[in-house]
Image (cartoon, rainbow, N blue to C red):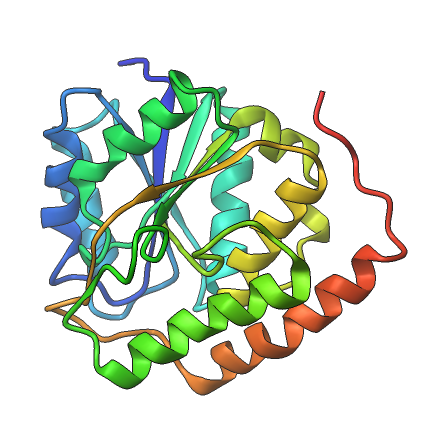
Amino acid sequence: MHHSDSIVIIPTYNERENIENIIRAVMALEHGFHILVIEDGSPDGTADIVRTLQQEFADRLFMVERTGKLGLGTAYIAGFKWALEHQYEYIFEMDADFSHNPNDLPRLYRACADEGADVVIGSRYVSGVNVVNWPMGRVLMSYFASKYVRLITRLPIHDTTAGFVCYRRRVLQTLSLDDIRFKGYAFQIEMKFTAYQCGFKVKEVPVIFVNRELGTSKMNSSIFGEALFGVLQLKWHSLFHKYPQAK
C-alpha cells in the first residue's frame, strides 16, 4: 500500500458530474494525498464511478458506502473515525464540486505540518470576501452568518461555516466525535468551536470559493436554520461544560 500522512474526505450525494474530475485533480498533486469518499447511496451512479477509479488508484482511493442521505456532519464523523483507525496524521474536509480548489490542499497542509497549526481553515472571509459566482443574497447571508457566529461565540475565526478544513490527528482524538450534535452547516461551526474550546491552535488561510458549475447544491433553509439556532445552543452549552484540553 502507498503510504501517506494525509487523507481528503469527500462526502458525496449525486455527484456523478464532478467526482471523477475532483479525484483526478487531488491525485495529480505532488504531495500524494489519499482520498476517502463517503457515499450516501446516490441514485445517479456516483459510487460506480468511484469503484471504477479504485482500480486505477487502488492504494490511494477508498470509499465508505452508506444506505441513504444521512447528513453532512454524520458523513464527516464516519470519515474521521475511518481516518483515525487508519493512522492518518492530517485529515481534510473538502467538497466534491470544485467550490474548494484542490490546488489549495498543499497550502492547508503546510500551515499544519510546517507552521504548527492544529486546525487550518480554507477561509473565504479572512482577507475580504473571496467568493465567485454566488448570488449576492447568498454571499451576504453567508458573510453575516459568520459575523453572527463570531458575535455569539467570541470565536476569533472569520469563516466559521467553512467546509474546507485540515485537522491534525490529535484534534480529532481529543474531541468526543460521538458528542458532536449537528448535521448541517452547524456541524462546521460546532467542530471549530469545540476545537478552539479545547485549546487547539486554529489558523485561517485565504482561499477563493467558486460556486459549483455542475450538479445541485445541497444548501436549504433548514440547514441554515440549524446553524442560526445551533450557535445559541453551543454557546449556552459551553457555559456549563468542561472541554478536554489539548496536550
